[in-house]
Length: 195
Image (tube, rainbow, N blue to C red; front, side):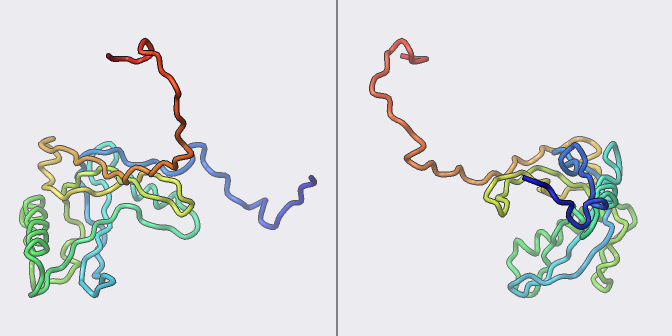
């Protein structure tokens, strides 16, 4: 086989040895709300999309660094969605919205949620975030893990370490094809680890 030099080879990016971007470890983090966008779900329900970054500690600025290192079509990799309750919203949606606002207030002395204000009132405020991992299936059918905002808490809850990281979320096990199994005709009792 002979190789030919394709267009763009000389300017193509050499990928880092790590094989991709560094993932944020599971744990609790004090985060800053950088941007907020009003959005609408496929069902027409309003929500807020928050872009967050780590504001304190060893991983401060982790996602800004990640964003700066990206080439081509850049994407912010640390977001939180908060449903905006309407008059006929389920009580749980209303509870989540009020809890989020209360936690932002308690994390930022002097800041108060204002119903007359717009989404920009959240910018620059701190909040606590608990991070776990979620398993997902890639388009090629292989499974991988990704960073997930599992729970919003008060910033001081993270600072004090008074939290438990929620368990990772895993996909159900893949059903094995019968051809993947084999039958053993005889087993000697001495080969078994228990009787």
